[in-house]
Amino acid sequence: MKSLSYGRQWIDENDIAEVVNVLKGDWLSQGPVVKLFEEELAEYIGTREAVVFSSGTAALHGSVIAAGLKEGDEMLTTSMTFVATANAALYAGAEPIFADISKDTLCMAPIKAETKLSRKVKAIVPVSFAGYPINIEPFRAMAKECGAVLIEDACHSLGGVRTDNGGRARKIGRDADMTVFSFHPVKHITTGEGGAVVTDDAEYARRLRMFRNHGITRSAGEFEEEADGPWHSEMQMLGFNYRLSDIQCALGRSQLKRLGMFIGRRRELAEMYRSMLADEEGVCLPPSQEGHAWHLFPIRVGADIRAALFSHLSENGIRPQVHYLPVSLHPYYKRRFGYKKGDFPEAERFYGRTLSLPLYPSMEDADVERVVSCVKSFFKKSKAITFRRAPPLYGNPENVSERDSRRASLYMDGRIAQNRECRYRIGHSTD
Image 1 (spheres, rainbow, N blue to C red):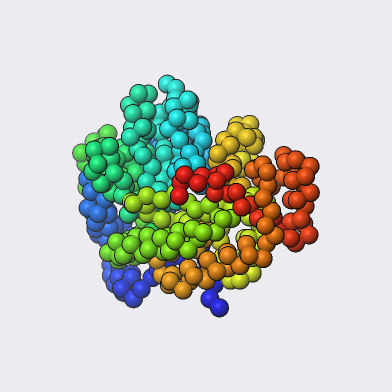
Image 2 (cartoon, one colour):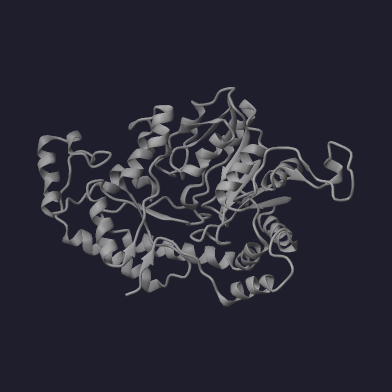
């Protein structure tokens, strides 16, 4: 029985051939293939510029530096994201502040974000979580109101499409001042590790390229001092070696040719899951939208049974994952900023119940059927117990009635408590 992970790359012979061609050539790094990949990515998105980085994390770091974040500034984002989003602000000396999510989109809620605006907010970073195309318009208005730079974290969303207020469909990457993508192996295309920032602003692109190359420029038109020869270069800012190699860019170029197929297959698989799990009362399906990029398929189940379902799937060769522990609840953030449970209830509620099922384009229909069968068998074997109140945030019986506590204790006996009211309590409207 083959193992099914929550995500994985799809490498074919053309990918291998393109990489081998570079390995046989003169340039392994800082060569012409980097520029070609950047040009092709920008053309695909529809932006003037694309600047590739060694990882999505490096690209996020570069974007906040290009935006000018510094000590004393704040960056507004969501707690429901990978830590790299928030950490980017810390790298620049700024402070990340969080707004809660909407249960209808799993993305940062504009109404919650508005309450966090101040003159100190210099960047707003909405995240298109799991591939869902967040409505960018409210955040654009907020950025304009407080003079902030709008940076979309679209590391989950390459190839996704959003419809603007005028009804026009636009690829994700065209609507913010800068948009960040990731090329990690589980993402929509891969370069092994890698990332990119796309933008229409030439000055942002110039800063990004300098930052990824130690803060050094070799462009005569940018020199601050008189050149002492044709070899002259200057370090004008503190930067890093965040370059992506020609080897990696060769793989990225080859993968980009199949991105349309990858996205189409992800949408087919997601629709299969939605159709086959629609009648499973213990499962709440993730929000859907026509332009969804479907990086993840995060279902929600009762907090009291999530761990048991995780184990059941794992024991049957299916490796799900949980995305994510809210950034605010990581020990570092709790120690440094004083965050605690309950600060972002929707994000915490989602974390307490979510489970990402396998979803990647090389999956076969039979693989989805196998995952669904395994999920359904779990609930079929479970003891159906309906709680009169919602399960506690982290499956802690202290928050429910004494009678419900006794029912929850059945889980400890191996008689799993099924949360049949899940979809009505945690987002039926999102289906």
